[in-house]
Amino acid sequence: MKKLRDATLIISPDYLQFIEELKARVVSARVTAARAITHEAILLYWDIGRGIVEKQKLHAWGESVIDQVSIDLLNAFPGTTGYSPRNLRSARQLYLSYSDPAIWLQPVAKLAKQAGTTEIWLQPAAKLTAESAIEFLRQLVAEIPWGQNLLILNKLTDPTARLWYLRATARFGWSRNVLLNQIKAGAYERAVTDKKTHNFDLALPEHFAEQADEMLKSSYSLDFLGLGKAVKERELEDRLISRLQAFLLELGYGFCFVGRQHRITLGKKEYFIDLLFYHRFLKALVAFDLKVGPFEPEFAGKMDFYLNLLNDKERGPDDQPSIGIILCAEKDDVEVEYALRSKANPIGVAAYQLQSKLPSELKGKLPTAKQLAEIVRVEMDAEK
Image (cartoon, rainbow, N blue to C red; front, side, top):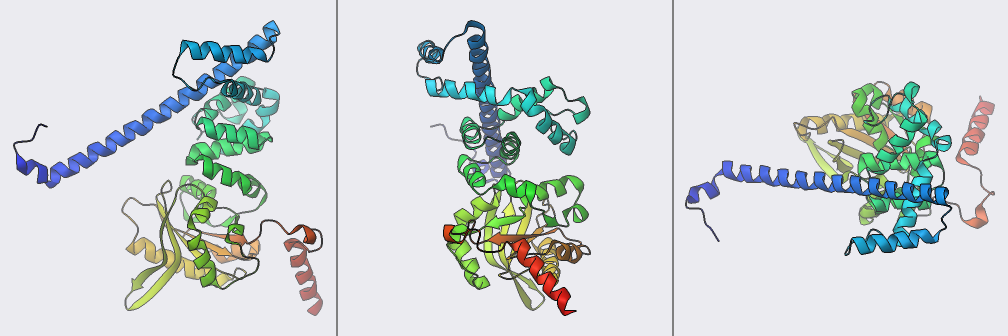
């Protein structure tokens, strides 16, 4: 092995920094190359699926042609594993699922209207055509790996839901396990039907506010904790830490755990944040305050104070402003809106669910949260 003669070069801080920079560049190049390979591989499956569909229509070929195509491709490219009959049938399904403008023009146009021109493949809604909508889908499916594409194809049938998960997986780099967990937890349904409560649009720049909004859920399912009733805040925290992996899956991809009861000092006093995370893609600290009861306006003031401390004492020079999430048992959206209106820091409020589904014997026998809230309001009005 060849050795360097200048021993001082090895221990030089400048040289060590240089090596670290080269390592980072190598990793970046490998990631870029892997993404490029994934992109071309999915486009290849799309083209294979399209070719099979078109030739079946033109020549009235039956299903058995897929088996023959698989044999011929495997013979032509020995050692490859991507041309099995199963994969080729999935490639055909991929093309059929995303190539009908009658199904996709409206969902893609709606996304175009919401996203403006921020999507690199997406034209403004006014200029969107059937051809450009399908091309957008073709490029979008190529942004995520084959396994994630198959999950979305096999687990979902609603086109809008498929589009939502495709885009979210592409933007946040969800692994197969994270994607599966998001689908099981109904992330799409919660994102589009439940109202999110935060002040991100007031406290953050527009582009960063949109990213923070996508990071926040309107509610979080904590049924993996195995709790059937309310518990003390410390016990809830203990359970979340003991099931940290499941909690991270529920939060979504990009969250990195920093610590629990994170200590911050101000003068001679100490303050403790229940759970502190760092979000890799937002490049921001995310503080969670756990509450076992309903939201109270003073919670927002306490979180605002914590975020001031985090920004002054622990925020990195290249980090975005720290974000606070108050996780409580229930919330009144109007009360939250008033509580956050005067806060300078970005704060979101979300409810958690200890059980995602009622036991079968209780279905239809208990009032919903909305019904309970209406009953309480009626009784309060009657007492006035």
